[in-house]
Length: 511
Image (tube, rainbow, N blue to C red; front, side, top):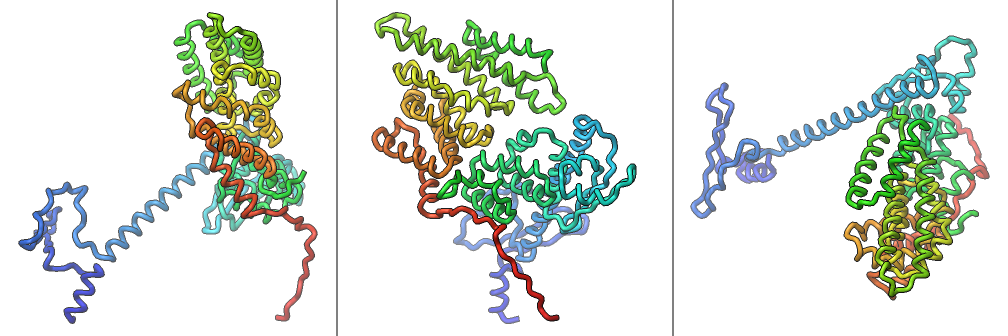
């Protein structure tokens, strides 16, 4: 072989350069390899010896590197497959629990098998009654056999994602689809929507659309939402989901007393340190309860909202007193502390509501506090700034998709309290180290971007002029401004046409 060809192969990594290293194995039974390396006089001395785990393989050939990469990819694929199988197994376990506990059903009378494009099969025993009630597709297929006590076998082939099909079947057994979707990402809900539409699971379609209308989207997710909705041809039912991007928008009783006493005791505690500790403890315990599906001993929604109303009444009284107070009075600090205390109590209750996925009604309740907002605007900022943290708290939760409320409620929330948040923002930042400026700005931005395009414009133009005059004293929501700008002036989505009016011509070609 010519020397030039050998040199080329050395450079490309197909063979090792004999002048740089020499390797040999003393015997078959020796586990280590002795390596001799030669250095030129001008080269640097060798680096300190490395351990076996960190020593790189000398002069690895291209084939060896490709083999190692293939091995890593194979391990990653196998790990992903195992995780998917684990999630599917969990869904099947939940299916058994729900069919027994929630529906009172015994063993299934339908053997449903889902087969992926690569041949992976998942079979589950389900119930004709549930499938027929929830899905028009299954109702039609299963109605062809009327005999009682006869088992049915149904197979769905060529599925893109077996896991999503299995989860959709579990959704049919759920009594609160909207609550189950909270916390899932947009891509997962889009996949569930696609399967729900394919099997004509109307309740699943409605719940997925409600979720998509209420949560923020990233720009990539926005494109996926629009693309899928156009493919599914859901017509009028998707109008609400699309309004934010359209240029022309279309128009457990036994324990309740105990919980009430515990929570009331914390809210009225005299010792601040003990109050903070008990808040932390009770919050942690309530959060642990929320992860237990079989738990029935939990604080009720009525109890939490009863306490919220109590705090709101206290705030109105405190602000009314502050408005009439002479600035020279010595008990000014006492009143400030009382307002901050009631605001902090309300923040704690809202945190519990968010954890329990019960905060949607509080958004409307807070948006309706016109009297409180009016009093808020008439007293000095040093008295009132803690109250605006409640608005920030709600915006953060809405921006994360942890509270699902209609668009009108979100807009009403901002209409009532956004100006107050602007004015108190400087004091909020300086008075408390626990205030995360970036977190508030992100939550506010995301909440604004869930509104219709016209509402986004009204709010963001108002912010634009205020920010130019106040700067860092105002929340910086430039990111929301950028997204609105692109929606309004660059992409300019038009209303999605009704595909039901399309005319289709079928031609037969000669064979």
